[in-house]
Length: 76
Image 1 (cartoon, rainbow, N blue to C red):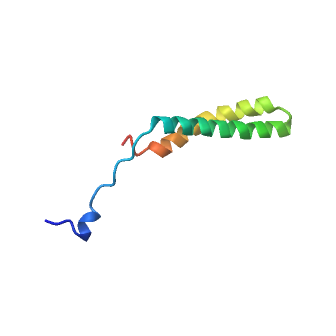
Image 2 (tube, rainbow, N blue to C red):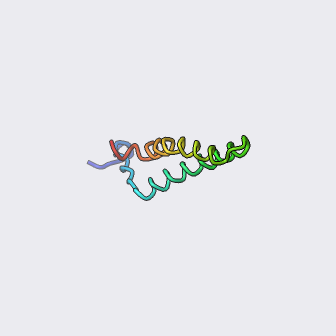
Image 3 (cartoon, rainbow, N blue to C red):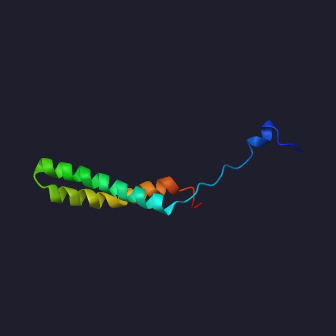
């Protein structure tokens, strides 16, 4: 039996690949971006260090969420 036009729609899409270096880079980049935003907000309010620390604290769970969203198809 040939796989004509209708058979092509029935094929599974390829499974996404997991790249540990890419996941780590995404986690670090997200954390650094939020730490930078926190530093800017802290600078505007008079406490750069406190703002950067708060941004980094918020950036870690945000980075984990971003990595999860990017690679969620790999673990299913």
